[in-house]
Length: 439
Ligand code: GDP
Ligand code: MG
Image (cartoon, rainbow, N blue to C red; front, side):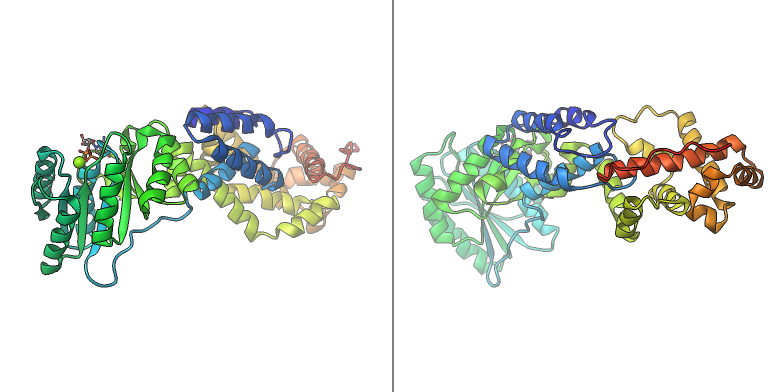
């Protein structure tokens, strides 16, 4: 998924702004990458639609390249797709909180039971496990062993008792012991069948659980979303736990569960150790999928800087071609504010090969520009035309800043070029040719 998206960003290299036209190709890549990651087609369609709409309307943030902007939009949409916020476990107001675990065979239910107990114990809650998989004696032993390992009591009633009856007895025991959270492990099948569903319904009726969590295996891709949907329709669940994320090269399962089923992923398992269970953070997941945490924080910072300054005022200036040296200075400083030049360059995807020498070069040229602008009079800063018209002024600036006249001329030319470029970006095409400097 990450590498598929990479080619989308690459197609925007050299562009000035996101347009309806130049996002067509990148959006095709994003679409393909999502489909390859096993996200279902209707979800992909809605996603691509939402991203395209936003991309065309974002406008320009100084210092941020279109590919970076698109990364940010895609990330925001991914987060939204996955439910936005962390979805916390619910706890009962009185009496024990009951968590019922369901899921197909081998997805990690029994492991999750013990992991969940470890997770909750860390929050200061006392736990008890109920062994509800009556089909294999080994399954009960497995839970008992895990219970010992994590130091949590396990209620067992052998394999001859119906799961709903085990549930009733276990809950009674938990109430007697004043346990905070009861976690019931159940039997899975290779596929959904009626016996399993009926059994789960019985258990659910008996326990009246606070949480019914479907455990799904991340390796199954969009099948995970389909399972969550089916279980929710059949028995009613409160959320999902996505396991084996450590072995999941495809992010598809995490991406579509919420969108398809309406139920959130609450927790994820990413390893075989008992500590490997954690809340599901949509934003972290998006960052991991995109592999571009740096770009995201960079764009966020740029948006901040943009907000702080009077963006409207700047736009006015650009529209009326009043962009002057003060703005020029502000803009270069805004970029500097986002971190040193080297950091900024390092964050730009595909710029990984910038040499330290090139970075020093860029930093130096920023300093040179600043030095020249600093010795300008307020009038000169506001009316760059004065400098374009007067070689004498340029000479003075060169002398006072210790730069060459040629460097001053270059700076003045650069400012006018910037005006033109910005006017073009704003769609105001008339006027704005670069004036020739008079000698
Ligand atoms: P159940 O049939 O649903 O109860 O599944 P189990 O809890 O017995 O787990 C089946 C296998 O998956 C075991 O070998 C577990 O160690 C393994 N497993 C469970 N969760 C994870 C996980 O998050 N990551 C990895 N790598 N393995 C897991
Ligand atoms: Mg099991």
